[in-house]
Image 1 (cartoon, rainbow, N blue to C red):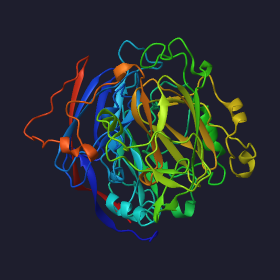
Image 2 (spheres, one colour):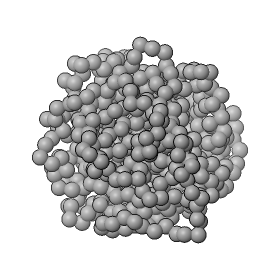
Image 3 (cartoon, one colour):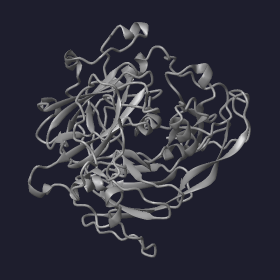
Image 4 (cartoon, rainbow, N blue to C red):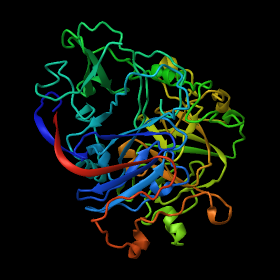
Length: 539
């Protein structure tokens, strides 16, 4: 019941006993070794959202690239963070497990030889924001499998904690909340610095931003995370509230929360904010002149894919989500492993470049992408909800977050379909480069991608329910040169499953993780995944 609450202990997936898990703090070009122990009773894979693993999709941690880590087994990921900076995160990629936790931050810092385009901050603070259901991931899976929608979440967590009691009617007493202590005083690239009083962060996205602690510290301040584009009466209590506490503060935060933009029916504020975020083309990134001798706006496009999603539909008696009419079924044998051992029928290289006039179907169809091609991908969102899309292994230039029907700005009508003429509105100079982009309902977003990273890379909806229901595919990118010398071979510790299960040897759990990576720095982490009673919340 929306107006009745009770305090409960809800089990979460903890990492090294923490929720969220411990941060992984590295520097550009570092080699990273992460030993993941699966200490609960389901298969597990850990993926690294936004980390551009060069030529090494073997470490990506999704079912199309890795066999799962079985219960009570461990697996050591080994990868290099290349030519990127910013805030990213790790999380379990299977079976809605992320809805129960298991996630943590990955911070990639500049190399010291690259100057910052701003004064060095006094410190870093990580803030995780996300929907929270009192039903665990297995119950949420059961709902989706039975054809139900997940419905309104029970709350919004900030760093794994519930809301500060800003309202005694909506928020019961005794809930643990997050407090950020300060003293007075974007993802992957630097952007032009602008001032924002609020920032829209969509599912799966991350931002790094600067905050100057120069306010009147007579009392604490609210940090508020609220849902957008939803019915306010239903979502009124689904608000995350943390506290920003100055060391010289004289009292607690009081009074109503600040008013959010009122745009359930008018999304122009959010759209205009997205278009205002631009790349700082005069600043160095992870390496000097990251675009080399060319600029993305002057490269000829080699292929165009229009990826259309629609509301979930029933296929074979099951609720499924689709891209271009295909609901993806994960292969039993990961893609590149199947290639190496010539496993027939593991997947199909026939993903269509647009929606075909046929009924939706289940399939293992992936994109046969051309190495060193430069492709244009248009995400057409014909669903009624906001969507986010993510591409593993890459950052893309978000050139087309624009309206195709300007009338929408005034009337709240739909955005319309992408057409060839829409290219005239693209930003071809200072578009942001990132791995996850939002797509408004009834609208579209266009991105440009340089396919220079060999492997099999996941392209998916970041909305967990849509991803679980099949709204994804993969890009297979192979260098046609003999032996595909630009891609790393399968690692010595590769796991086998599906048609290759007979190759898997029993694990020896007495050995510890040992790095086999050569190069610059080697950073070691051991992540132990376990379920623990850690969160108090209300329902």
